[in-house]
Amino acid sequence: MKAPRRKQSERSAQTQRRVVQAAACLLQSQGYAATTVQGIARHAGVSLGAMQHHFPTKAQVMAAVLRHYALKRVRLYRHALQHTTTSPQKIDALFKALWTLLCQGPEFMATVEIELARRSDTELAAATAPVLARIDTFMNRWLAAQIADITPDKFMPLRVLTNTMLRGLAVEFARGTDKHILEQAYAMWVSLLRVEYIKALNT
Picture (cartoon, rainbow, N blue to C red):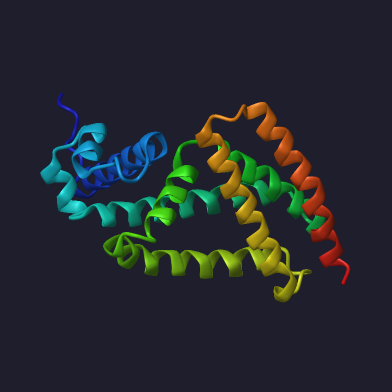
């Protein structure tokens, strides 16, 4: 007996996943400028026409990469926070999750490539601006709600500092810096920033 044919919606979802994953891999390995729609389709194992049916432009593929990574972040954060109750426990769990995000898969470096490319690519900036705005709004509110003991005026600078360090580490990964050294650097940074988070809890 033949296996039942998948629904069109399932085939479409699979194609979109393959395209997004291929784009993230190419962004990590060769950068934004060298990542072409033809290369993405080839790496994804789909025809250019099939890819452009879902994502007519390169910029729209990049917007989908950003959405995919945001969903991955939220899933990982929620999993990390499952067995935490106090704010210090949540802070520690999120720091561990952030290191996992940095090391697990190509998406983090891919998003850095996209955000840097937005400066000189007006089509990319236009396609990704609303996506990034929605992601930032959601993540700021959601994370602040998880650590509600820290007031927004103290939480936002801490979050910006956290994101800045992570992006810097992503660049070091791309430069080929030894992972063990980066892990040590991350641990040192966490020990310093954790003090500021705990201080913010108590003020």
